[in-house]
Length: 137
Image 1 (cartoon, rainbow, N blue to C red):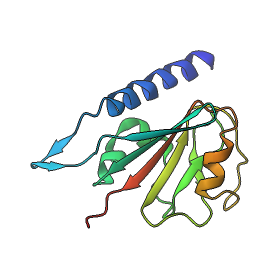
Image 2 (cartoon, rainbow, N blue to C red; image 1 turned 135 degrees about the vertical axis):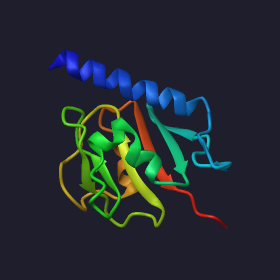
Image 3 (cartoon, one colour; image 1 turned 90 degrees about the vertical axis):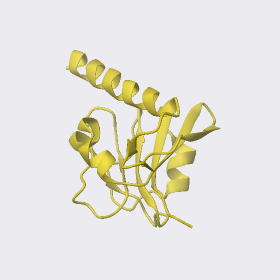
Image 4 (tube, rainbow, N blue to C red; image 1 turned 120 degrees about the horizontal axis):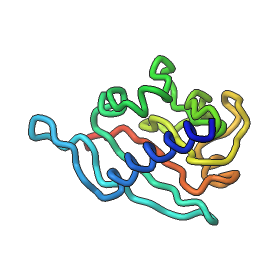
């Protein structure tokens, strides 16, 4: 179990490291993922990642495994043991896709936390990744 968890963390960290380098995925000469921006709340780094095509996440092996794309509302993962990003965020901003924490625990309950609550609490996470849908202005 520990080996599987470590391998999964390594895989997730590799994906996020790739994203954090500011590399862009290019499809049909259109930018589909923007370089992330980040902030810190206490000891937790919050990384905002904007994607213009949700299929990038749906087709990525890691996200396909842990996001429940049948849920039509933004969600977060309650704890690192299951990684299931399935708990609905209360009153989410319009273009929020979901939130992933790399560690720690949060209550496994729908509509308990809004995005600001999740940002402030962390509960043992070193990194919080917030995924946004790009909106053309």
